[in-house]
Amino acid sequence: MTERMSSADVAFLHRESRTAPQHVGGLAVFTPPASGFDYERLVRLIEERISLAPRYRQKVRMVPGHLANPMWVDDPYFDITYHVRRSALPRPGTDGQLLEFCSRIQSRVLDRSRPLWEMYLVEGLSDGRVAIATKTHEAMVNERDGIELAQVLLDAAPAPRRTVEAIWMPGPEPSSLDLVRDALIGVVRRPVALADTARGAARDVGSTLLRATSLAGGVASAGKALLRRAPASPLQADLSEQRRLAIARTRLEDYRRVRDAFGGTVNDAVLAVVAGALRGWLLSRAEPLRPATSVRALVPVSVTDQADSGGGALPSRVRPLLVDLPVGEPDPVLRLAQLRYAMASHKASGRAVGADSLAALSGFAPPTLHALGARAASGLTRRLFNLVVTNVPGPQLPLYAAGARMTEMFPILPLDEGQAVSIALTSYDGGVYYGINGDRDAMPDVGVLADLIEESLAELVGAVDAESSLRVGGATGTRFPRRHRTSPADES
View 1 (spheres, rainbow, N blue to C red):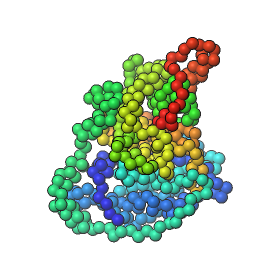
View 2 (cartoon, rainbow, N blue to C red):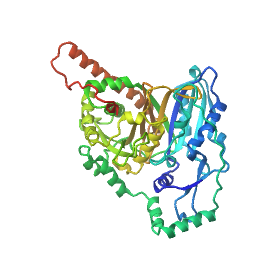
View 3 (cartoon, rainbow, N blue to C red):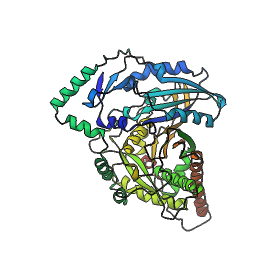
View 4 (cartoon, rainbow, N blue to C red):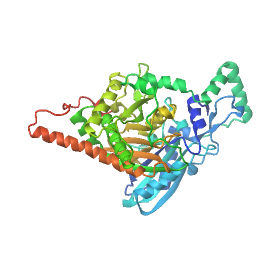
């Protein structure tokens, strides 16, 4: 099977460099069943289900002379053991050792002569746990037919659903002459194809800004924000070839308590937590902060339109939204209020896809949605924002891989040139798990930022407790009216 790559997919190949790999990563931790979980079992599971994600057995073939976009072609020498690898930590492995291992593998670009993904089974963690680290090139995941391997590997019950390994026969790989002939035929049939290909290979900043403006237009002053640079920040730096990873573990119930006490949505509370953590991090670096100081985040959001057919498919649009995080505001409740106001217009537009809709998608969709979020962010010039923050709700029930229960899942977003750090988070089975990817040289204190995320949430929860005490003590009013949850969409 062959298929020509879209211009958007090709853009990720062109923008990739040694200092800016364009793959989305993930780190999942599992508790094995009594029967065990080993490398052979993982490989067998993937072999049974990889046919459900056919792109994972295809590679990229460039067209000689760049006469047309490259092709996805079946890899006739596909070797599952090359892509699925085994490693181990010295027992009992710690979080720090696991993150150092993942930092090194996430720093390396994928081999373009093979299908653009890798998976690592990491053994030796404390308490008998194992971890699975993944890398998937962004060119493999798009809004039309994107699917991530994790979506087909995980089950909602310890007993794996019955699957039958499909017999796979790779299609014949086209020769260079075949590629040139097909490209020329395409140009003859559609004369503008060659011009389209040339334009797609370069970054079209103007069209990207227009696309972003159409989405951000409903947000207060977002249109004006697009016309000015992001505030200067140590979050902007020249990238090295190495990364540092950090993680934070929080509970979804805490965000719900904040939402119920002060209004807004869980996503508003998340952004307020990130803003508080960034404030603490900037203060730890002795950065001067004024009350109006902000850090601009690009927050990819899922939107829908009248053309959407529904039915459980991926949202038809994942678009970038620019949000100024009020890091200069010392009061956590006022930070939340500012973000509630900024996000309300987008939600009121009726185009936002609620968290309940996302969580109801078949399979484990968060890896795919994080990848789509990274794609939505990639087209904007780095001068417009300081960092990317993706928040994807996941299922609130345990998932399993061949009987091994997934206990935690940390997404990892790539860095674009000039961006020193990215923050991704996924809610799953009562937890909210943050993956923070930082440049190794620019972010030696990335672990501090992870710790501050947990502290920032604790600060907001403390404000909720104080608010409750005032009510119980007979106070006649509060800073913000209490708001009861009205619909599952308020989780977004």
